[in-house]
Length: 74
Picture 1: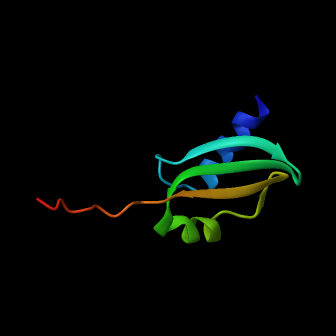
Picture 2: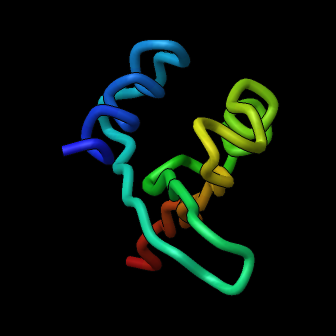
C-alpha cells in the first residue's frame, strides 16, 4: 500500500520516538499525515524537524498535555 510506504519513508528519513503514532487522512486543505502522542515539551522540536510537506502530504504534529503530578493532601 502506498500510504504505508510513505509513512515508513517518513519514519526512516526523520526518525522520531517509537511511541509516536502516525495517521493519514484528509481535511479542507487536502491530504495530511498526522503525528500523535508527542509530549508537549517536544512538539516544537518535532515540528522543526519534520517538513511541512512530505510526498505531497501536509504534516501536522499533535501534542499531548502532560499533567503535573498532584501531591496528596494526606
